[in-house]
View 1 (cartoon, one colour):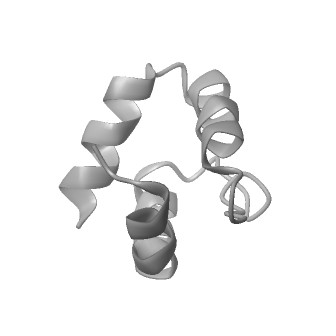
View 2 (cartoon, rainbow, N blue to C red):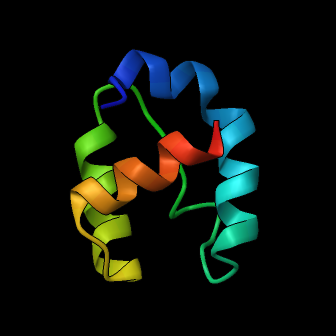
Length: 63
């Protein structure tokens, strides 16, 4: 599982890849703020219809 710190460090590189895979996402959907990881993932779960585990798998595969 990716921690918040790891996600923040990689996020600028990952969000471009994530947006390419899910074109319907906006910059606001992918806005990462310190301490807000769970909230961002919750919004992505709803918008993409994915579970938290599925999102983590997707994020880890993009690295």
